[in-house]
Length: 295
Image 1 (tube, rainbow, N blue to C red):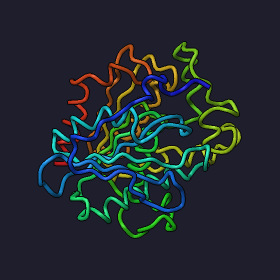
Image 2 (image 1 turned 60 degrees about the vertical axis):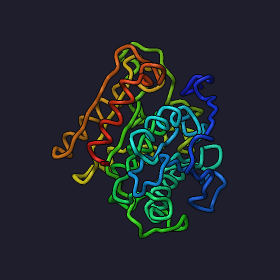
Image 3 (image 1 turned 90 degrees about the vertical axis):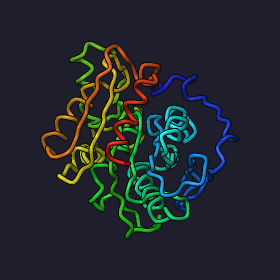
């Protein structure tokens, strides 16, 4: 299996000493040690901050809340006046689908329930995920009014879990269409139909043998007119997730929810993550999108 991120991109170190208000490794549920999140607030005495929840990638199998995704979002997000919340969730090495989306759902409910304690605005919550985290962000966005991933044992089952905006960086959407799309692109990409692919390990069986689970993991399955605005970015030379995943998903979003804002940005020549997604201009574009719906 190819890694969703280069090892050097996954290895990030942080110095949080300059951030005065922060809470690290806060449990949002008690079923697994993985169910923890970090909360960072802008310096000062402000209150009622809009929230951006960061969902890391890693093929549903590895990764951490203090990874490349947090590196991209933390400093510019705090400067823009956002609370940045980065979450861990159960990986496929511990629990298969639907554990990960259940955890994301539980984290959203925890943040909303405890908003006053952490100086957050419960009515202004956005998600930003990349790769497998993009799938989870998109899934949370399209299921915001559907109790399909609500596990009451994780706490606060009656707290709403909808969000107001979603950013999806190169997330897989329909696992079964990725290999054929690579053939169309002429790209010898990561193989997803194999029994040991990241997606097969995530679903607990080879994806070609469990089309029902593939459908359940597909954000398109739950599209409804209440879905929030989306910003989607994908590199045209991505060898891990074909860019058509984002193209088709954005088309389905626009068809099903014509009254909301959908923005697809294909980055010519970019791969699966990397410097072209991390430029100051692109990060500004992401926060300009969040500003429209969270401030």
